[in-house]
Length: 117
Image: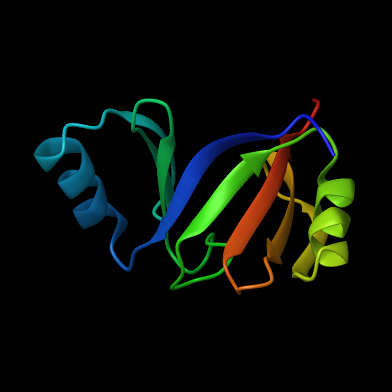
């Protein structure tokens, strides 16, 4: 399996505004993108720190690694074949194709690929 690019850590929040304030004003991470009151992405340098409420979080309450890949289905299958599991089979949201998996220790991973519009 090739062509993976770990780019994002997704954190849970119950209050997006408060979390954005902490990560941007206190920790100095510029806001890159915001989607309503349920998702925001901040510039953490070489990694994006995403904040998501239960509405948009792939596994609410867990820290999840986001990995960009051109083949979401193949990546999910590879993790499953290695002893992990698929929590959400591949689906399209407003911005990207995603699949949510967990590794053999229960850690969450979301594979994603931007939708071609």
